[in-house]
Structures are given as C-alpha cells and as structure tokens.
Image (tube, rainbow, N blue to C red; front, side):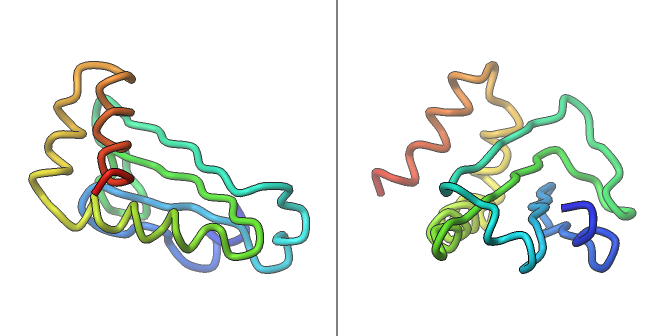
Length: 102
C-alpha cells in the first residue's frame, strides 16, 4: 500500500481514501476483505481532507464487488453524512450493511 501511495494518491473524494497494494502484491492475498476506519476529525491525505480510509484486499478480483459497493455509498453526500454522524461502530456497520440489502 505504501508503494502505491508513493506513486499516486488513493484519495477518492467525498472524505474517502482507498489505499491498496500494487499488482505485484496480489499473489500474497489469501482472501478478499476490507478494513474500515473513520477518523473523528479530518486527516490530511495528499492535501485532501479524509475522514474514512477503506483498505481493500481482493482475491481473484473479489475487490471489484467491494469497490462497487463502497462507490455506491460514497457517491451520495447524504449517505456520507450519515456515516460521519453515526454514533458508534455498530451504527456504522449497520449503515454499511444496508448496501448489501439494496
């Protein structure tokens, strides 16, 4: 992930950064998964304000489905505000899980 970030910022807009590894690292991924971090206050990410960092590891293109779902959520300003306002981890999880039900 650090190597990728050195070459190009993974800031996506709407308070979101999605750091990910390089193509050379794909063979080391055992299973698709993600990590989700919400910062209480914005952090600087290559000159942009970020509140959410989503780390994605995708096995056999499994990351494409994850990316699609993250894009759905973060393309909607109202949904992003709900994530900002969520009072705790359980509320955040519930909001993120809604995209699977749609």
